[in-house]
Image (cartoon, rainbow, N blue to C red; front, side):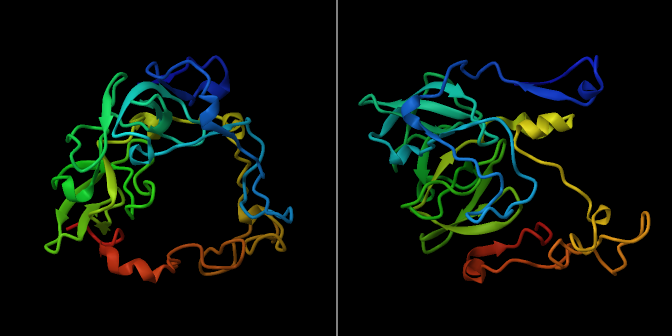
Length: 280
């Protein structure tokens, strides 16, 4: 993988950069592992905008992503790495011993032909999937499940990884430091994959021009101060008028900066160290 900058023969290419990925297979996705992705352009069932700045973009097929423990055997062989337009990370096409194929999230350390394992007795190799109880502390992990009966939910974005900090004395929970700096208690019976998520150069790519963003399904973001007062609390006034209030507001009149919005108090007992506090 390498970040390539274009020679700016046009203004749009001056800041433009692209991630060259020669390790990805130049093939169509497996038809049995894809679904039609309906596009809603940010509208709800009444046709009203529920998510701003979305619409247009190229058509996509959704790749059905599973985890090793959801497969049909304890071992799987990596056949190829593929691009997935629905996520920042790459995906790996694997085949189980009985011939069944599946897509999984690719790790940075994986190679084509590598045999992956899952379960309590799996080897401590990148890409293998084990319960947190069987992973030594200090190991780098990703795609962490919060429950043994769920798929991986945490640490799935490109280049991300978490660290298993410790196992608690009762053996029921493990403490994991997430990429945000939060230390969280997770059931030791839940599964996690060893290694780091693939495509670490994703964060270094410069989109470079508006048209490329439109191809990705994003529409323009307009400043509130450039709107009318019936569209945004910052709108109105003659010329470039100030917003006329002590602090910025959202389009719905709520404080835009510094206001805590977390409501899920039920899971506070699982947070050992808050991500907003200084790291110890």
